[in-house]
Length: 320
Image 1 (tube, rainbow, N blue to C red):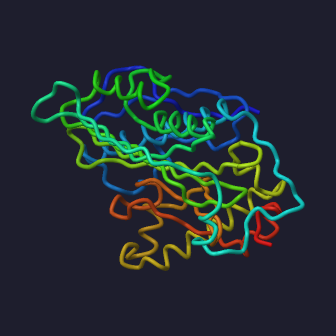
Image 2 (cartoon, rainbow, N blue to C red):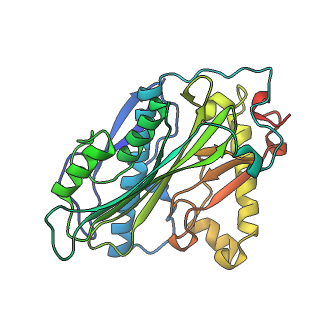
């Protein structure tokens, strides 16, 4: 099955009021929804030069996340189905489950462009590695590099953070800044969930743009679990319905942000997402800025409880 993805086309850096053109590419073996600039949810809003520049940066990040999904598939191969006779989600608090799982070590550093004085581009890394698990460590390193939005070709000229750093010094403007971060969001003896975050500011933008991607890692099979791997067959629509209900609860819980509900929903309509993470409470679905809410809302998180997912998730991914 072929699905359409949008990847950035070759070209120079784009400034205020200019959007980078996109070119459609068919990628085999990845079954996710096509994504383009139109899906950022700005229907009905007045678009200014500043908002166009912001949208361009946002679109770049979302496009790179699709490239990240492809990179994941290439690095970890087809995701194997977990066993169906045991629960993968213990009935414990977050404090307890976080004691188990793969061992991690922090990786932290901040660099400025060598030889630069005055306003200089910077890169900050606040990430993790998994000693004894180079496959997952390399995946995180590769994925964070792919999530960056700076590059002049469809295929990035770098494949890891070290290569990205060298490329960044050659292409960055004086005040450009990149933050790459990774942390474990949930851990037990069976699963390790890693949250990857990027924040980028390009000289001339009104503010930086952030993006998030979850990795749900199967400790036993050493594979990334896609949404299709954890849903029962034929339950994708039921999952989307449960996510929409979680979105409605999120709207009700944020009256100060929403204001007039009809106006807000018209400007920021609900969007489906496969960016999920296992937690003790249920599946957390995280959105980037401007996807379902204005920038002031940050990166909204919707929670679908495990009770709401009975009959939707495979039994082994529900608490015993």
